[in-house]
Amino acid sequence: TVRLLLILEVLLGLKSKQGDITATFLHANVPEDEEIYVEMPLGFEKKGKVLKLKKTLYGLRQSPRAFWQYLTKKMNECRMQQTKFDPCLFVGGKVMCICYVDDLIFWSLENDDIDELANKLIAVGVDLEEEDNAAGFLGVQMERDTETGLLELKQTDLIDRILETMGLDAGTAKSKWTPAESKPLVKDSDGAAISGDFSYSSMVGMLLYLAGHSRPDITYAVNCAARYMFCPKHSHELALKRIGRYLKATRNHGLVLNPSKELKIDDYPDADFAGMYGYEVSSDPSCVKSRTGYTITVA
Image (cartoon, rainbow, N blue to C red; front, side, top):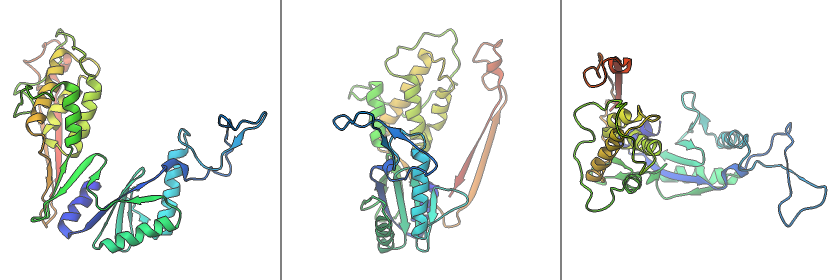
């Protein structure tokens, strides 16, 4: 949804601003049919006494849902309606807003309309901190070309953290211009154990987040490595480092949003038959699995 709205921002020349809600889980009221008691904080104890909560706190299981109900109610008070297709998208007469927990992005043809909505939210009790523009959202930097109006999504901070964790941040570490070798990444049951220099599962998680937001060029290589999350070998560790070396060479690259005015949706499916046969042990059923995949583009 965020990416589709960014495409509309490019096509329609929309203005955008980002907001953040302070102390997110402290705003909602505890439901009247629930009674929650907590011990009194140090220095304020009274023998035989406890405190009854009127507001939610961090750590309560019901706090996220209670906050979302609170935010939805406040949005409705400002005439912002939830869409049926995405409950995190609110649409009003002149402004659209996407919410991800306590992070919000507003879009409108005019900045004054965004400011007006922000002031209304503050007036109804939402502790909103408004930023100048939507330059970054969920760790993704959005850079606009002033001449063409195109947006480029980058995650250089995350790439730097990945390289540092892998030990590839030194100037002597070699770079690669492809994210994977030409041969497939196999199970390698009899291969050497991983060195343990970094957490394999944590690294795959960071790379998946990167691939899903700003670097689709590493998606296939990361997905291949993710197949062996629970039984990684040294060869799989080297495959992750190969991706890291590729990111080192292409650190400043990102996903450029350059949509056409027709806004076409294309689907590209593909499949293989026993794609690992000849690369793994022929007696292992996993080597003769067939795989299918698809890519959907909106441009």
